[in-house]
Amino acid sequence: MIEAADAGAPLVRLEGVSRVYGAGDAAVWALRNIDLTIEAGDFVAVMGPSGSGKSTAMNIIGCLDRPSAGVYRFQGIEVSGLSPNQRALLRRHALGFVFQGFNLLKRTNALENVELPLVYQRAPAEARHQRARAALEQVGLAHREGHTASEMSGGEQQRVAIARAIVSSPSLLLADEPTGNLDTKRSAEIMTLLARLNAEQGITIIMVTHEAEMAAFARRIVSFRDGQVVGDQRQEGRR
Image 1: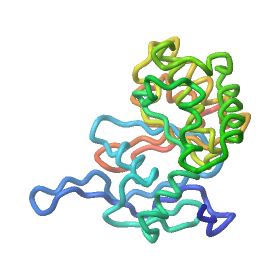
Image 2: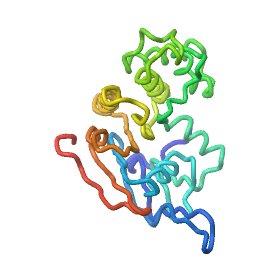
Image 3: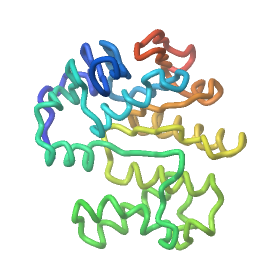
């Protein structure tokens, strides 16, 4: 794993970051010279209309895309200076991902789905089992470890996906519309779980959402429009 360059540095720092696709008259500016700092332990909801740049920013932070200009630092490390293999290591060991569509292996049980990141890390089998069971316990699904995705509700599948995202003890959890496929009740349950993981375990979370009701669970709301940060506010009572 890549060591942090500066233990006192912010977890995430975007400095003058732009992202443009295409060139000339066909150029599309997804991000325009944005600055954003996120400290360890925060829970940030990223909001904005379609095409606002929020997903592009998430992809850059998640090392799934690279800025056209500006600097992205993760724990003080300048990510653009890393090789493809180093960026892959950063994703594998320091980042956890939760998606709207769950992305579980359908014919694989919950325990095996949660173990998957540890398989890629070549963790020993017994250690994988123990850590996966602990992660399922954290999301309240220890009793469902032998069930496949098709045997679980949407809310349970998303809990398994969250367990998979945290099983490697990542520095940062990135959640892209994690309640987008869930009804109101299940959405509130997932958001309560994320808020608890943040408050009790200090897991740093960046979440993209369209829904103000879901963003209300976060400590901080950052708003995007036309590729720029147009709002950044702390939530009262969520400090």
